[in-house]
Image: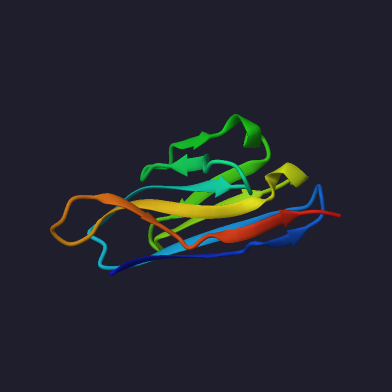
Length: 120
């Protein structure tokens, strides 16, 4: 009943930019922390950035100064602006959101993933 739909991935040259979006929909009582993970081939999924309901942000060291996370609570959407992209940023990017749906406890929901490829 809760869905996270991502968009904005694709192929970009090194040094380029992409903006990912992730919209939550369904039966949402409260929308808490949101964020992005990524997983490269043969590697574990790792946290990229997260943002609280109030806008406090947290970034992995490898994206500090290059990526910016933001959210629009009215649209139930989280964004990831990625600048100065490097080939090592190539991965499937997954958004997540901690959501309380109906009367149940809050839990994490995940998007389907969007491919980001940085290559010349």
